[in-house]
Length: 269
Image (spheres, rainbow, N blue to C red):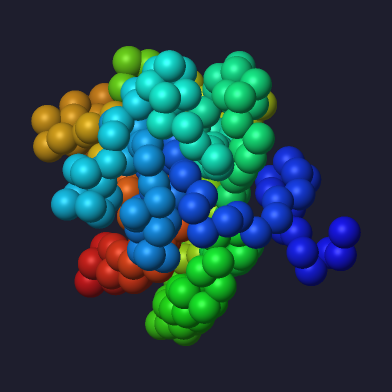
């Protein structure tokens, strides 16, 4: 088999071009959105309850559970030819169960902004949306170049919180951390044995310059800004940020780059 006839996914599995009748189930919210933006909505036969964009389009697609607790029987009844999963989002045990009756499991694992380019190319190749994927890749490159050329971004030490009770943050080995790094924002802790560590919030007093409270997976609100400010130095800047814009890869990563630049400029003015 020629190398030009296949593409490999995040675990090295080779994938051929799918037939035009392919039935796709996406268990990854950001990739569900990407599929729709590539013109594949009519072929999506299942999604998770967290796959919420684009709203009007996904409302017509059957829900088959969550990213961690998929209803296997609902998934099976949709007779998918392809299921798209993600190493962070979906449990290995779940994926192994699906493999028993679905031949094509596409595994994704973007861990940095530029990984979006490979993701676009992979999905575009498999589902014959090469032209659309190339256009999206060009848009991503343009937005990234614009962000990097806006100015020399000063270093900021950032604590990016994703959960409360316990407080949880991100390690440097995550997509979010590498997105922030584009504008010289260093996420803390800088060393971690887990990708999403639990922390003692007070340990970061005097260590970081700013705390960002993500809108997902925990839905931080204004009251949590006040809570964190109370637990830390009252002078510590604490702000809410759009977690989708900073953590979703796929097509949302394009507007995420613009959002990141606007966020940074807002902080500095």
